[in-house]
Image 1 (cartoon, rainbow, N blue to C red):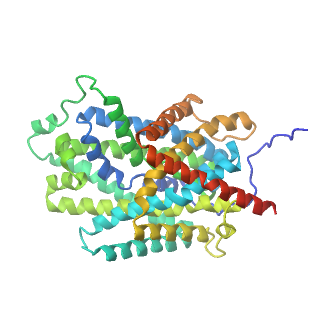
Image 2: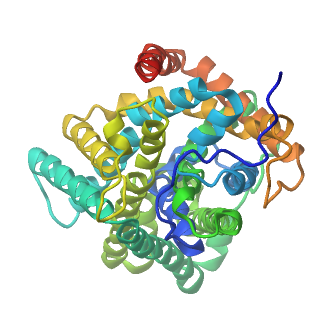
Image 3: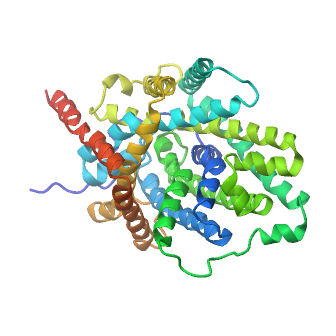
Length: 453
């Protein structure tokens, strides 16, 4: 006889203490997304696409795509408010095997690779104020990540406070850059207006669609982290209401900041100036207020990258924690600190693994290989809303996706195209990324066998 469907989503164990609110959740999302991308990606795009209108349209379209994904995660997060986020959604929709493969990929490459890369950017800009030798910089990076591990292991509130502070500082710094552009207006005003012309391509150039696709890869990298709220859903108060609100607020802030910052870059430097710059934000600030501007924007970048590293170390270990609780990962990672009530072992694991990658410099290849696999799982995660509505229509859904199923389908179609395009444009890296995922198959079988024994 077929078992009766569960009337409520699974809750097989007590979760971590719920101590985070809307601002905390939004700060984690904003802090994770706004790292180094907005300071690096604009110049990469300007070298391929000179028309400001098309550039802004790409940032806007990618923002809308992220909103579609975030709205979908809002329903999933409110329905399944447990630590682990996408791991939990994939597990419930497709089974524990696929959930494990997602967690395996994030544990091995996605989180530690991202932390190491952002930390490297932090050290690069720290050299603006404190010139360091190669090995001294590496040592500082390791100490920084150990410090963040210690802070987050001492309690979710400590990690959230650090996140809130540095998220505020980075947003304030970028907002200040935009306001300076509006108020100071460096150079003749007519020249600045001309920076936006021609606003749109006069004709469709051969290969433009491929160029836009490549630009979207960079922009979507800059939006990476939009799914982070779900990882800490098990520690959010009143998650049925708070998770959707935190996601809406966080994505709205990121999209506004990105569009405003790009417009300010164009206004001050022009597309040609952006394309010629390796430090577009610093060059824009210097054009307005001289060397002081370069120093201030460098401080903003330091706050931005530091906050992004903290967001990863705060949210990432919750995936390992959830996997261990399910019996498909090292059981030591399921332990909760008796005093601080945090998954401290999982936090230290990510912190130290990221520190090792920072020390060795092996993260660049990991990030490239993980891109293909990560977006494949993002596509599966968003599609899981359709699977779960059919599989478990009886589960309570405090928030329901607006425009269902079209909102989710738009994301799945575009993200699917992105995955296929990545495979075609970077087959070697994609195949290596797929190999990392497949390497998790024997590991999963081993843990399942151990659990059944």
